[in-house]
Image (cartoon, rainbow, N blue to C red; front, side, top):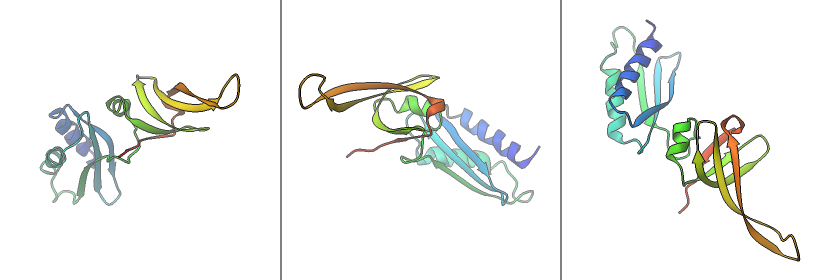
Length: 154
């Protein structure tokens, strides 16, 4: 069993004990630096990171392979990668970049194939002068999304 496979199995076992926490990314560098990025349906606490770190670190032998370990949450500014992250952020404002557009709008729906965004836009009136506010909705398949980030408003 390779070092990466062993780390993956230990991480999987640790996550099984915390079903609301899920893996975003696992990276192991050539210098054996293990970087685990987590997210959770209700966020990630410091204790969650400690528990996952212990599940990995306490079951690896530093005499066999020296390593460093970093376990952290994705953070607010990290791009969304998984469908589960989109579903967790329903009702929040996202900035979504596609090949042709950058849309900042409320995430109103997320299923296994696409997300639905809604926003208000000012457009010229069909009849007469001036502009009117129009409610817009757009479905965007995950395959078209280059990057999606939750925007924080104060």
